[in-house]
Length: 178
Image 1 (cartoon, rainbow, N blue to C red):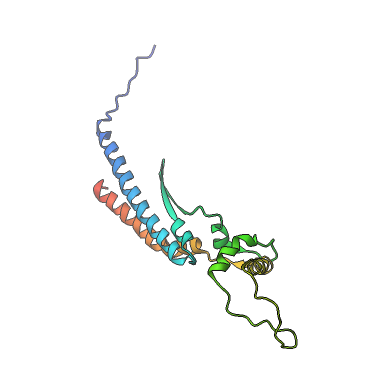
Image 2: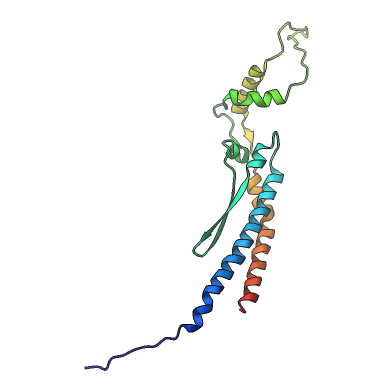
């Protein structure tokens, strides 16, 4: 019969790993917050403004994961995807009721209604409701280009985000004596 066999492994040197793991989490989380704030600011500066609701709705969230962090920059307004990607021509028109507040904030210039012969028509000026209907119909027919704030912000801020995480890795290398 074979002699019992044992292996002794001294793990006392790994006690510092918990401190290293905490330092890695701290530095990477700080870098993620810095990167998130940078991209959020870039999105906001690229966003069209009417009342500022969309700009004020953009935020970022940092999530720790097993092997890193995730930064999500987003907003929860219903029309943000359309603002980002646009609307294809020939699609169903948006609901005109949703455009009435916008029409009220953006009055049309004074119009003189002319007939085909150039004579003044005796029609009334269009109401906000009728203008909203016409705008919605035009958007449905012609589409609407996207502003691509998120896509362009990600591209524009990529060098800064990369530099932020490179700096974080340098800090970790120094603090962990690597």
